[in-house]
Image (cartoon, rainbow, N blue to C red; front, top):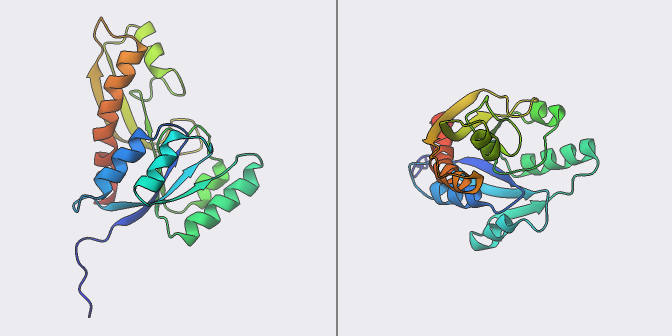
Length: 192
């Protein structure tokens, strides 16, 4: 019998729409022996997403999926995921809402990172809204994806203090640093 070397890594797809800093970070963590996932596919709805460059840098297959006809697109993505034996989807700045059908039919797990302390500030402009409401803390949340926007069960959440000098741009930078620690940690929690 053949002996397995090291733990088996869960095949993962990362969905992006923008710069891909969380994608780059997850790729880095996936290379660490003790992290139980590998990044095997990058999917983007936007062909000019800057994060797509990591596909070439790290030699990971990418697919650009134009979102027009929802059901057709769902089926196309599901076929690709099945063919690639993907067991986990990580949404990382993916600016499209997945359909109920897609969420139900993907029998693996779908998780997302959101730049607020959910259930507060679902959706967009989270940092701006937190400052406007004079919150003392901001943060990020990794949660399971369900059919309601930013409403799935929380896996991990971390907070950061909002200083009097912070504006939405400086706060976004603070929270992003936190995201880079929290996302891989959350994946480790659900897969270990």
